[in-house]
Image (tube, rainbow, N blue to C red; front, side, top):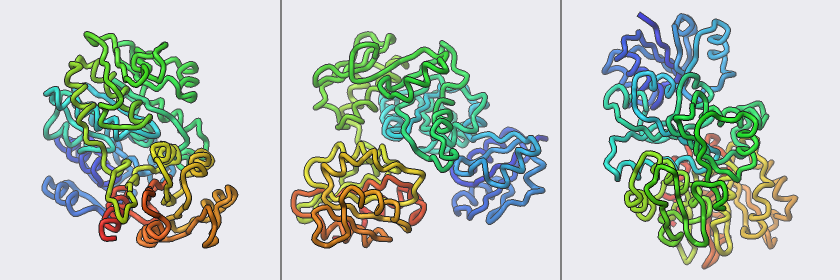
Length: 453
């Protein structure tokens, strides 16, 4: 009997452990932190052995194979020890894919992954397809394969998940964009992060599809360099060379598989803004490749409700609009949020810096933000960068910055700074793990505070 060790007992790890058990593996689960009660229950109900609060190396280093949760870096001592013993370390997605014949539609990119994944899932579900949602959102792919396998999966993939995928092949791969993110995990070398993103094309052949934003210079350069074997489906703002594009105030999607092009006015799109037009193009191309009717695609584009914590309207208090964009965990995502703002904005940002270059948002900050509220344990980098732009801690400054170290104080400072007609935008640019358990936790706390103003 083969022995499978699972590192990390969150959603993906617990799902992988259950799938391994159903496939005849001897399974052991190890988590350096604490395991949530619901996952302990799932493991205990199947008599799967587990430990928390640390790793017992003798229990781990006799594994035939290891599934590693994406949050565990390759530099973790337990992973280094596994590599030294040449024990294979793979991702949950890689493992689960061995046991399903489902069509895999995979989405990655620095920004827009969750929106595009959710929108495409909505399209397939409206069309009546047997589809599961997995990866960074939805339920564990491995658990779904073990308990209720589907014919199609729409999977959001982070660079961390792609790092440990080797034989996996996406039937449709979508790459939305690449901007610097998670550089702390990639030795602060941008090309390493780029390489991780392009693993989504790994093992693809001309039978598979690769959908990508043709106007991203990083993607364009890498395509020329590595020449993916998949059939290419570019999208962008211009008709030339693109299968989805804009024409005046209309979005056009024309994959070869479509009976006729889809033509929808911008004003009819449920998701507004330049970035969401690109997300809508990518999802619609994938839907046409899968032979969905333009009617089903149009219905989804017009009615999709959006994604929580991404430019989510919270409330209007004393004439001030409050927007929760907690999912903006990198600088480029904040850029898109600021680009969508109209009028004066009070921006709340900060958290766990991942090697961020804030200069990307300088122009929009100067154009739209009268006040900056910093939220984090350590705000020194933010104070230095935006201080050089002319923002000051002086109370009477035209461009003011305020440093806080908890969310309640940040919201109160924003409330004091904003006037009727202004917008308070939580778009942190940073990861949440200095003060919160997740970006969802950060967003939920923000909304709760705002609703009690």
